[in-house]
Amino acid sequence: MPKDFLKHVQHFLFNPGQIWPYPRLLADTIVWGLVLSMTVIITLRLLGAPDDTLFGENGVLETLQVIALCTASIVAILAAVRLRPAGRFVATTTALLCLIFFVREIPSCRPDLALACVPREAHRIVPAVGSFLLLLQAFLMYRTSPPALLQMIHPAFSWPLAFIAALLFAGEIFEELNLEAMEEISELTAYLGLLFSAAWMLRTSFRVNIWQSISDTAGALLQRLNTPFDRRR
Image (cartoon, rainbow, N blue to C red; front, side, top):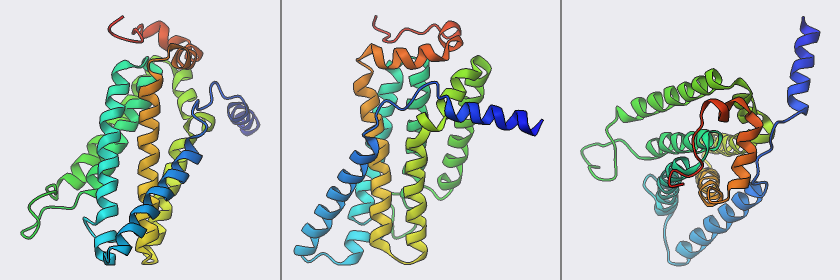
C-alpha cells in the first residue's frame, strides 16, 4: 500500500496537467517590488522622512500594500467574471486571498484612530469567512471534477502561491527580528505578486487560447460547467 501511494504521488508530481502560464511572475515581482520599495524609501529619506513615516503603522509602505491589495482584489474579480471555470477558480482564489490580506493590513479602529480602520472583529471574521469560501470553492471543484482540482493545486501550476507565502513568511521572520524595513519590503513585494497575477489574468482573459487549454485539460470540468468564455459572446 505505501509503495502504491508513493507511486501515485510520484506520478502526480512529475506529470503536471498544466504549468502556470506566466513564468515571469517571480522575476517581475522581485524586480518591481525592490524597485518600488527602494525608490520610495530613498526619495522620502532625501526629504527627511523618519522611520515611522516609512515603516510604521499606517506608514507609506503599509499604505502601498493596502493599495496593491485593494487593486488586486478588484482586478481579480473582473478577471473571474470573464474567465472559464478553471481560470475563474484561480481568479476567485486570488481575490479572496487579497481580501483576507487587505483586512490584515488595515488597523483596528480605536479612539485615536477612527479613519482608515476596520472594527476589531473584522480581523477574525473576514479571514474565517474567506478561508471557508476558499475551502468551499475547492470542495465544489472537487465534486465537479477531481482532475481539475488536482491540476490547480499541482506545484507546477500553484507555485506562485507558494512563492508569495514564502515572502510573507520571510516578513514574519523579519518582524520577529525587529527588522521593520525588510518586513515591509517583503510584504509589499508579496502583495505586488498578487496584483501582477490578477492583472495578467485579466489581460489574458481576452485571449481564448490560454485559458481554453487550461480548462480543456481538466476535461470533465468544461463538460459539467458549460460556461462561455465571455458572457457577452
